[in-house]
Structure formats: structure tokens, C-alpha cells
Length: 277
Image 1 (spheres, helix red, strand yellow):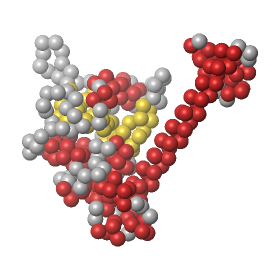
Image 2 (cartoon, rainbow, N blue to C red; image 1 turned 180 degrees about the vertical axis):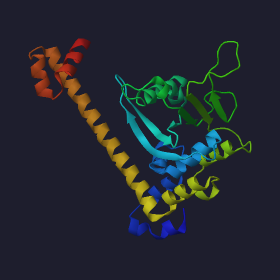
Image 3 (cartoon, rainbow, N blue to C red; image 1 turned 45 degrees about the horizontal axis):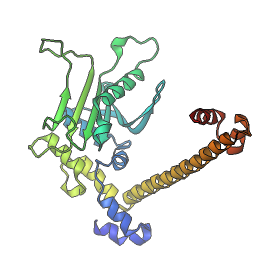
Image 4 (spheres, one colour; image 1 turned 120 degrees about the vertical axis):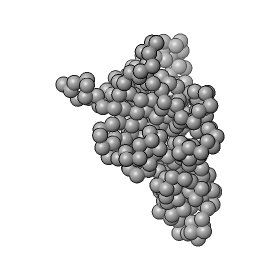
């Protein structure tokens, strides 16, 4: 931790423990990555330029935790961006192999496609789209640092180009001297001064060493912790209510409507619990 931050601990009212925790964060931490990239066109642009090998790519919009509403299931995208040509990008950070399944990438692509066309638009207007998973481990287990998944016709080598692109970045890859590895290194790195990519390094330095940046990170994680506690308490309270419902159902003295009123649970939930008996 820098001297500048240490000198201002009292005015910031941030504990030594919190400062140490912030110091250990890397961009592979989903929440920290969200903070680093939210609205930061330069950093998102830098990442995409390295992954796609397009040094002239210009990002026009970028946001984190964008929700896409689905018919039966909705999703939050870690990073959603569009470039100057209208191409869509989704960058996902995954620390567990389960969360990086190929079918999840397919679902993300489908959801982005659904939200990319307006009523009456021709399907040919569907924009180019990239879904990029940066994973902590080698999910595809072939020892590569980057996997670009293509579509082919049986027996032919020519690519089928439908405008969809799926890319996996192996966060456990060893140093092979490439720009992709430098990006991987920077996502795993906890010290801004040891990072290769200038924009990412500058942003991480701000969040870890600048008084304002450290306060932003601290407040964000405190809010998340408070929300987690609140959700846990609500879950526990709900469990108690459901336990009471089961007891009342076994007694058989009240109607389902009356039980719903007494416990504060919805009638639908009470009906579902009744079916378990």
C-alpha cells in the first residue's frame, strides 16, 4: 500500500484491514473489475484491442452489470460495450468453471441478439457480436492462452460467418511473451506498478492508491456486505415463516388464505408448501 494512502487513513476513516483487503484485489475479482471498468471507455477499449488484435478499435459506450430481460430468465452482463461500427461486446469474468460453460456463452449471445433488433428490422441488420469469457482456469483444457471458437460446415475449412464470435481467455496461461498474456497478467496482478497495459494500470492505481479511489472501493464493498447481510436476514426470516406454515398446515385448523395472512407469505407460496405435505 502506498505511503499516500497510509498518511490519510485517519481522514478517510478506513481501517488497516480494509486497506489490506483492497491491496489484494485484482481484476479477476468480479466486483473490483466492475468498479474499474464502469463507464471507463479507455480501459474497455484497451482490453478489446488486445484480445481482438485491433489497435484502431474505438469503444463508444460501455457499462457494467447491464441487465437483459428475458421471457423466463434474465441475465446481468459483467461488461457490455459497443464500438464505433455498432459491434456489440460482452466481457465476462468467471472464477469457477461451472460459470463459464459454453452453453452460458451461447445464452449470452442469444440474449444480446434478442435485444439488438427492433420490430420490423431485417435479420441482416443484426450487428456483429463478441462474447468473451476471461476465466481463472483453463476451462477448455487445451493449454492455450486464447480460444476463438469458429463455425464450420462439415468437411470444409471455410468459416461460416454469421456475425457471432465466442472467445475464451485462459487466466492460468503461462508467459508466452504475447500481448494476450500481458492482459492475463494484468487481470491477475494486484499491484498497479507491475501491470503492462497503461490505462488499466492507471485505473487500478487510482482505485488502490488515491484517497478518492480507495474511498470508492471501500464504500462499494461495504454496501455489498450490508446488502449480503440484509439478504441473509431476510432468507432466515422467510425460512422461519415457512416452518410456521408447515406447522399450521399439519394442525389443519386454518385455511390457506388465513395461513397466508398470519405468516405474511403469499398465498401462492403457502399453496406450494401445502403440496409438499
